[in-house]
Image (tube, rainbow, N blue to C red; front, side, top):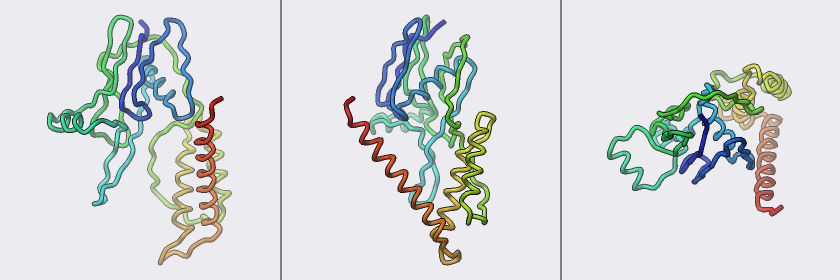
Length: 223
């Protein structure tokens, strides 16, 4: 059994894609963030590798939290699903050599969700995961008060990055550091501001801004 084609539409990075797989070898290329790993996760689920996906948290005016599953669709289609109380949204189709299956996801979801491929077929194969840290949600449950030395946060992030292949989560350490910097840098009526931490935090944001401008400029170049 083998894959024949994959179609995804109106979900996450994908406006509309159609991929026809070669019987022997298919090479998928693209820029960072184009969705290559997402496509491979869909295929890897047939080899026993189940990856959960992250939804985007949103707050309404009342402060209530909801999660967006990455689906973008026109209002007519959305109203139709709500009126018919449809629990799932179809985002594509996976075609095998002798069969096919729709790909859907829950319309309402939590922070983590999985794709639903009802006619998925088990195959022999192997999945070599990306070298990047796994995008797993882990809430920050405590705030550290010893934020004066930012080198401590850097060492913790670097050590967990080296151990990321063994289950460590460096993204959590980075998130923890940024939250601490945001809280203790500017301060408030009950906390004294820390100029050193504030400078570090503003410098981090400037670096992100420069990186974004460079990536945006490179995308416009025709090589």
